[in-house]
Length: 434
Image 1 (cartoon, rainbow, N blue to C red):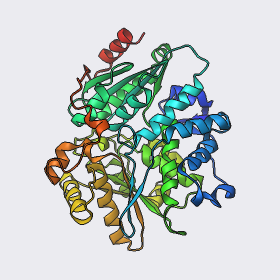
Image 2 (cartoon, rainbow, N blue to C red):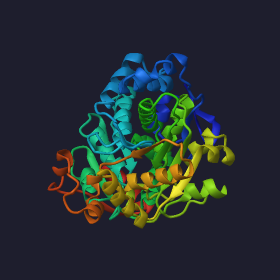
Image 3 (cartoon, rainbow, N blue to C red):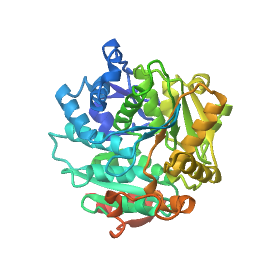
């Protein structure tokens, strides 16, 4: 299959180029020339399939022309070594727990799949692959875990200073080995801009064999579509769910749109954001106005210029009416988010993290407006990753820290501090990435 740039349909590349180079030279994003649809042979039996069987079918639909079936099976089985359970708080109010992977965040699905697909695509090469990634919290930890000590790879993670939680930072900075962390004096958008600029510097990108692990990389999104189908099959026959997605860079929501494209019946998607409400504003007014992000307690959603917006536009043929007919946007303040954490605990004895709280608030508001709706809220990270918020709202020690996260607390942080300016970053790359 060929892949084209969202900025230029005539710029077309093969799968290997799209995945390993990540970003077209015109600063668009790669999309497949043909969006696959799963046939009746899948949808006639999908409710009886396992999570892995769903993943194999979806991955095959997207990549089967270029990756042998047995290799797709191995990639998916190696990715899905943990579940994504659906928890019902009350009738029609469901939580999809996406934090059961090694770094306790939904990014584990995409990062593990991507690492395995990249290993397949580079299996006959001797060159070192440099994975360059910006993170607002969870992406960096998932990528670090997925690529840690993988032969032939090195990972450089950019994160905004003071804008990730303490344990999130340890996941980025304490592994060592082939993982390097850069602490940037700026926002996530500044980190993302540096990564994009590095890829657009074609001489630099090719010399250092750069690839991205952000959701600008299509191989991050496809595996995230697995759990939309996996969760929907657990609802009653005939129910079309409303998926509620706490959103920052909008890769997760785009993955849901891919699942819909494959044939999954969905009533609506809710884009739930914090004060960084660029997409809800667009859906309301038809005007896309990216702006500097502001810091909130749901830090992984602190994005003011979501990369995947252009993919969302492409999926709807650049139709504002088409997008707003499928996606509803809602935004909530930190105060509302904190209240949501407390209310979910009080009513259901369930610990929900700040990002999930934003989603749950949107789900509740939607059900109030549409009483028959059945919502699935994506709980994207384990609440223990945000101890300051959880302890303040629920009391110290109420949320237990899983062992795989607790062991990081006493490890040494190792990070290089840089400004958000391009030249010092480019110079650092030149001196440290041979």
